[in-house]
Image (cartoon, rainbow, N blue to C red; front, side, top):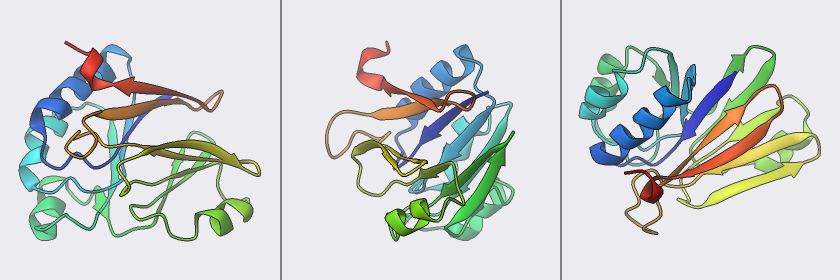
Length: 163
């Protein structure tokens, strides 16, 4: 199964639309968002997705009440555990205790955001990934990832390359 993993969209609706186009073309069935949606109106784009959405609140998500309402409780306080098929995924915004969590062998994948920088490494048997910043505001390189749960291979999607 293909899972789209994103973080730090920071209200960039144009990049959310670009990402959603790729996600739909690639037949991803799940989106995981590692926080900093920022405003509830991001639902106008992500709400068009036909699959499952899982997310955590980031430090810049201001109106949590309305975010929870529009996303129908799909966004939760970090960390959360998501199980997709037989893949155990921990999702958080800030990268706290990642090494300890990875060494616990409780998860196949740990997803985090906050730093706006790509990360894709193994700690023990656990894949640790940060999809970078979907918004592109800090580093001018908007990215997200597509994860294949059958192989745990990660593809980095650079939105600047998407028309």
